[in-house]
Length: 278
Image (cartoon, rainbow, N blue to C red):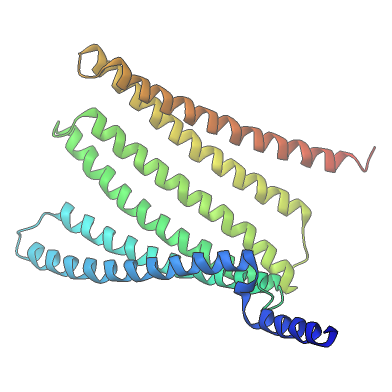
């Protein structure tokens, strides 16, 4: 009986080394990867469709049947979907590595982990850059139309907020990349670990997050002002205005939480700097 139990245990150990799904957290990652595979296929199909649409729009543009604005929008949409597909593939690679480590198929390797994380963040940054480029073009177009009184002030303000938000997202992505590059260089032995640099990059990251939430809050405040003005004219009910008020309150709460994180980090940094001298 003891021998039989021992044999069963050895078989299970052997299976575990080859099948990560025998571990609950690894199985969860496998489920996520399965979902990502379907999403990647959907994105790939979308990219092919968008390419066809863009080529058609390009031909119409050459014949003067489509505006420059429509062509730019189609081009940006295609670039974004291509970047999104690449980002999702990079994310899948990271999740696959996590699953194999959790399932004890492979040993944890920090250089490998940081490399996969860096690749994913770079793909996210590519998406953010596409968004910034299009939002910048759209803002210029909207500004020109606003100066000719072809669009209203709200449309111009929305275009400006969208551009500022896209810029903040890109800046946030760049600070993440800088952090990961430093960690990876230290683990590859290319550069000694620098605690001061780590704190500087962490502060820069949190500052970028604050800038992002400041823009979001400014946008929410602007939308509330517009809603209140429309309410005075009888175009919105008090209940509808309350929704915009709640949106602003949520944005302000999120901003306050981000500022608190930065204050805590700066306090910890100061304590770490002064404690040895004490």
